[in-house]
Image 1 (cartoon, helix red, strand yellow):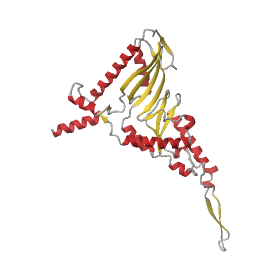
Image 2: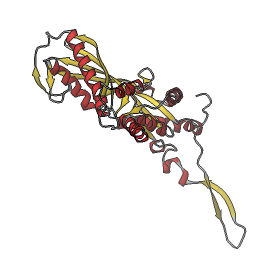
Image 3: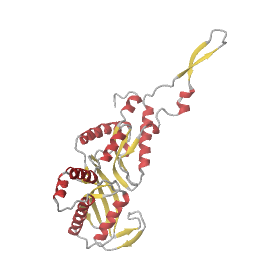
Image 4: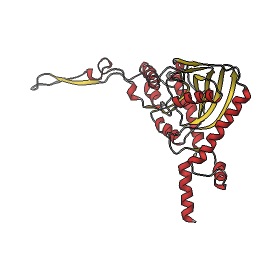
Length: 316
């Protein structure tokens, strides 16, 4: 930041991926507005160019005219507004986090929007910590909703929870092959599994790749889930379903995203650090991580695997 003497130099460096920490209770659009507003305010504080002058020609046209420079009101900050405005910076996010969800939020600035789209096309995994409470059920499946049922939870044991987690993970692993129309007892399924995790061809199908209980302190519990194509209501219903499978009520108290692909919560900038200095440092770090990811092979999807099998069958 010491070499950023002017706002032009700083603005040229705002190209890449930024990893932010989204607080709960705030919409993504609000986070985007807060980030861009803070960046533009600091860019305007930096050394911006002075208003351009206009050429004024006056005097009698039959005699020698007077030519002089005067300040141009068309380029005055008081007339046209600040040099940098929020619409001057392109900004999109990789995945939509609901209002109740907090944690890692990956956004692309300016040329980084293309990098963000490449991330989306690679179907990256997301890791969440789902905080829940047993013995209570609300109307919207979240703790802030109206309570409609209360019940016992003292009979829930750790082994029962672990067994349920294994069942949910196994059913979702089987579903991966079902979406690819492959029998799990065949050599084709084995060859497909050795090539890595299978990503859904559709972005509307949630799929769990791993789930486990990392904390159980009745009535509270924390579930860690590796998932793709998730959305807020799906995660809420997952906690609700866990309660039903355990034969008691359960509601979600918090949802926290701790990882998006290789971007972790340790890299995420808190809202108090959403300024030009920390954002530029974060862009440099995240762009380096993105370059390492781009050297890895692309993720396999069911559709790409089906198409490759069809080509092989045609050749044979």
